Length: 308
Length: 308
Image 1 (cartoon, each protein chain N blue to C red):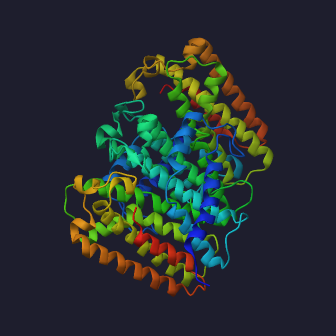
Image 2: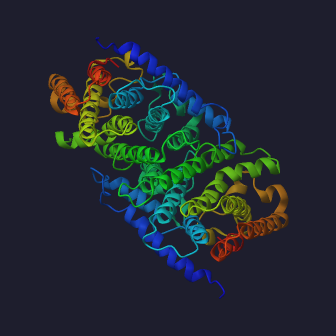
Image 3: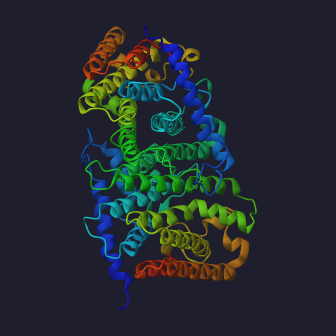
């Protein structure tokens, strides 16, 4: 039977949105001595809910299902928590990246950015607390997730997010404005800045189902290929799409004199490179030897063919 | 034999400083694909090394030793990593709190603050990456820490640092400037803002040695008492000490019209309250039933009698 991505996405998005909303609810999570201050909670909810394509959570769930060999259900706490944790890290990074001292952006997902809405101090704290919440979500006290899986998920997420991952890539990006980078340096920056977290999404989903070493390794290669493809397409869209379609300011990277694939290799070669990476991703999935990778295949294609 | 705190501190500080320096070293930690960008690493090192009383790491190690019944050695990776992780969280919070959109402070530990030295974007990223590094430190890939202990440590640290802990307290603090708080509200704010992490230090150290439930509970009460005492003394010092002694700007809270214990109950009653909390802390330690809590007793006294 042919796999149809849209129903799969709708069903899984519902799980993710509902879990995120619960985690960001106004009430104290079980085991907490105090409810969260309402101002902070509002800014955190604003940053995460009602927006975002949720690509990373969908990758987590698709990777889990590919390894586990069956659909995720409500009792699969580990992949659902992993999916939310990755999205919380992604959301925190957007909140901080948009601040005046970084990209100084005022529009995100078609809404005013968090610092515009809640002030800079509010955005700083909300981003900080979203990062922390990711690790809280991964470490339930109720025995619903095997402690060894909790430890593995925290380890994967921390390494993908920190100085040798997302934050490190952001630092290289900051230091690169106005400089010309080689293709190798640009790839290195993007593997850290956006690739590491996309790759970690795949690996975290797989880790919840304890894959064989061979499959884990092939999924790691898959994650790396789509992580890089995502950024190449992002650079293409920055110059070809308009702000309304993107939900953020178009042409910003070019205006800010940031190094991009389009600047380095031109539009057509960038598109061809994205297609080649998609083929690498497909090949890696075949390498896994897993019987059903249809959702991962479809998500990889979506990354390449997306228009925003 | 009478316990002597200073040699104990010197010996344990050496372990902590050496481990922190290694974690913040310029080279990639084992298991990382890339070295950290040098600008980011420099800001992170600047924020953490060569400064700080390391009260939280010392509490971690003292609590571990009290429960374990023997001194920590180099092979005790769990408490040493817990000690470093707590200090990394503390350091990240200082870097972000000092930023212009928060307290806008230019002096910390007698040095220019991180945003003065590395710019606001550098301080934002360094703080973000220090928080992440804490969770990386807690989740070694080399099998040196039992995965169940890793999960427990991540869970304790995340809950103490986030929206129902330190970040939440900071948000309440921000919202309280210029408002008068009741003693209950002030205590609640401080239990989140500084108390939760100090208390978590004690609990994380204990968790590395898997204490009996009764001892764990008493240590939790001990941690709560010294956490609150720490803040009361902080408020007293803000009005009685000078900037050179404090290594940060004195009189700042009063100038900023922030609610403090001194503003609420006056200097003498604040001092008496700190002494009463110290007695609560001592009583809790007796409750633990542990044979040797000398280092914890001495650290509690140091919190009360410190001059900076």
